Length: 328
Length: 250
Ligand SMILES: Cc1cc2nc3c(=O)[nH]c(=O)nc-3n(C[C@H](O)[C@H](O)[C@H](O)COP(=O)(O)OP(=O)(O)OC[C@H]3O[C@@H](n4cnc5c(N)ncnc54)[C@H](O)[C@@H]3O)c2cc1C
Picture 1 (cartoon, rainbow over the protein chains, first blue to last red):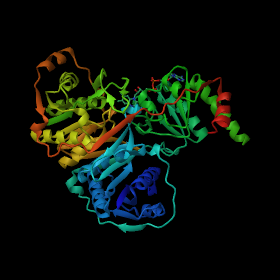
Picture 2 (cartoon, each protein chain N blue to C red):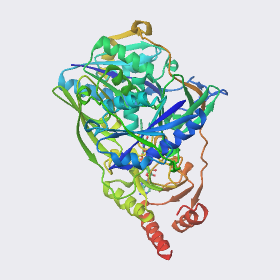
Picture 3 (cartoon, rainbow over the protein chains, first blue to last red):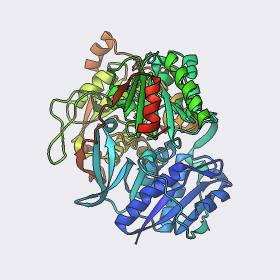
Picture 4 (cartoon, chains in turn blue, red):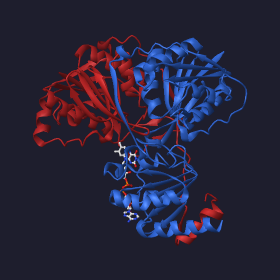
């Protein structure tokens, strides 16, 4: 029997949507392979995470609760994940293609001598059995890949899957005696500087308002993007140029090398739409371009292009959205 | 101190990619560049080398053509010498690339391996991490700042939710993000000098890999479903009307 081990991600004890989208991918794969699903939760003082995950159809939820796992350091986490995979008899290890998954899962693959497919957007049938579809060349082409080793390692792109719904049923919670080996890892956690925001996070938001270099400064960025994000209850994103120029924090970046999002509604404000940016948002349901020009690459993918100076049209847009809301 | 840095060749991001009927990539007439993330890795190697009096070695894997990118992308910028491993790139996966690098690390015994965090063709983002695990070394991926302090590298990493700082004891693997630095241009003198710098050629056989089979295989490439351009709206009112009644997303 095939077994898929899904690595849970959480923040402040709350399960991240990335875990549920990975579970969705795992379920699709489980249907094709006839596999069962287990979940692994790693960390320190993480009791609540496992109980929040019962009811998603996993047989066993392994909890590796150990002081040396407090920070997701790649060598220690990879070792413990590989150890759990062995105990569970897992032949597929899956995680989100978040920065955590990208950092750690290749090490798991190396430990288990497994082939790895990164950032998959679909589970597909190929002539050689179940495989994965993944973007290459910033999404200019999609590749269907198969893994030829007995054990597979996969990271799933969050925006390409739905959050798995709870299906009820019980999972057995099993505590796992982890041996992270922090000393041998020669890795020391120094600090984490988190981006503070009361707005929804980019990967969980239904609406994203992203700003680009055309906003000219950090002040301009805040002046244009924040009121609109607040008016629609959206998350804030940015082009690489806006991040490079210091308009906003690094983890706002959307694109080939930043986050990949597919919200219901995406506002591209003063963003030209370079291929690397489109790679991170072109699967959004509805795209609105707000730009002084109408002939930029972004206009070729936008459902609606509003041509105008962001600094004049956005205040008007916010005002009218507020009026709409007030009218109910 | 010794630093090994990767110089991978990738197709120009603006190149039109062509696939044939059975879904294989046709690589005729495509323009190549040095992987942008490798440019950051090369720059970091040079900066660390000048602060720590280190030797720098650039490695490229692929056919003969790859030598151009080692010379122009790395040696001309100031890297001391190059290594070219002759291999058919399309027959390698991330695992085999990491195995080749591991074999070279065992010959050269560097204190640090710097790589781009991903190559903009395959976009897999695996090789540095695979290599670190194969070597049993610590890693610091997606670096936006690297400082060497004594026996450690202090690395700031761009991660979801903010910036993480790690200290890794050397030898270690570090992968570069784009904000790590602004890669220098090669000077004319640098380009001239690069022509005479040593560039060692290795065959795969020289490296005695225990396994030369890729683990992951591309069975088919295809074009993503296109998105057609929508409409230009006249004003804010029309936009709102479209969003509320046509698209129903507000
Ligand atoms: C390896 C690599 C990886 C990359 N990864 C990413 C990535 O992940 N994400 C990413 O975004 N980019 C990425 N890039 C960069 C990308 O190529 C572009 O340079 C970048 O996306 C441009 O950002 P921009 O659209 O904000 O700026 P620009 O291209 O300068 O566009 C600014 C736009 O603002 C408009 N404008 C100006 N003033 C106004 C105004 N007052 N009101 C309205 N509109 C106005 C202009 O008409 C223009 O369309 C990457 C590049 C490389 C080489």
